[in-house]
Image 1: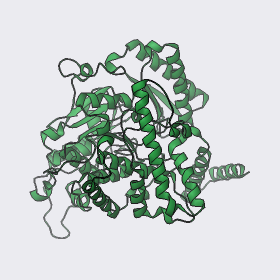
Image 2 (image 1 turned 45 degrees about the vertical axis):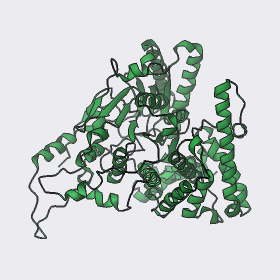
Image 3 (image 1 turned 60 degrees about the horizontal axis):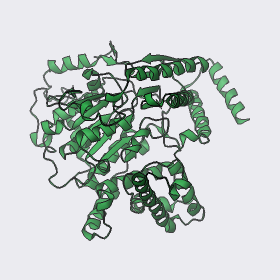
Image 4 (image 1 turned 30 degrees about the vertical axis):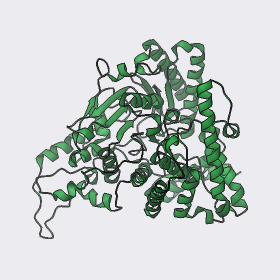
Length: 582
């Protein structure tokens, strides 16, 4: 009855001649609330492990005992994960399957690559947010996700499981000091973001769509403009931390909704850019593993990361650190590296040192793909997308690239999230069935809901991260992947098989995670760093009213902005002229 009354109310709003913005907002909120309610019953939008942990903690909450039993409950989780890791190692060495207790309780649980100090993580998180003192609101999906993220950061800080000793007093004191600094740091701004988190941890757009590709004044990094700068401020972060970096040696990132908003570019985010810069300066390899595939058209990738590359150039990132920055396009198809000119350059595929040659021993690497099998896979995906558009009456169009096919909205239209999920699950089922019929020609693939679109890529992030680990010499336990799509309709899901992962939901949360990594790794970091540093990236207002001398025009900068005004269609890579840039 409530759904019928809601539909009647929506019809009245649409039929009204004068619809206020408040009514439109009310309609969108009702639609979102209904969608959220339905998704609580949808299995593919749930994470089995987090849901199980939440149900176990519910008993303590109902009995008002979480404050006294919460730590012990997380100790039990920790013990079950340790046992699960042990059983994993036995199964790998003996080729026998003997499911752990955790696997029996949570059949969908995946692979763990490190131990997780969950008790310590819960106690640190609870000390900061006092979640155990709540009487009316139980611990949420997202809070458990945050605790798991913190535990993973702590595990990587302590190294591999074999070298982690709880009895080492000096290590324990150092870790305690790092956690105290983390507890005193400001809460992440993502808790006050312009998006809403569903209980399944996914990011949903609010009443407004994600920001379009723009070239606003505040979003453009400003070059020197001939004005003398305070070099002490510009170079204050150049010397790397002299102590050992206590954390992952390679961190890979998703692109959309992790480093920048979905469908947008990395234009102006000085705080996140600073933390990525600090990782590179401290010897960490940073790689963007993205579904965006423009083959080896480097300018299109550079546009997506324009603000970050401009930041590196502004800070004069040394050549040896530039060479630790990589981008893997099309999941695992196109590998690029940052040069000393702060431009992206293709990495050689074949010949001496070629990344395809060097990783050919990996069975799923693109070097071993049969082109006929690639064509067959894309043909099947194309057929499913075309039929989905017709059967679901979608306002969408279909595009095909060399190693990907996409279902994207028509201009100024949206595709319902349910329709995208339905399409992705159809493709997954069809390709799985195809793989069983032709096992010798099975290729890795990724069919995923991108939030506003759906894609099928040949290859996936498991292959991409595995290639980087092999080519650059980083072991599994020293690698970390950060992304927002860890449900089974997301493209970060596959990375869980080959490295530890951090599940975030927005670029703001990525920023907070990197800040936590740097703090726990021992890198000195003041909370005011990013705010003071951002002045290097934002233009000062023209003077005149207050009597100060206005800056001279920088024609080189004007030319750069004119070229950047060529906005790019992030789906096709085509450039679209914008007549509104001033």
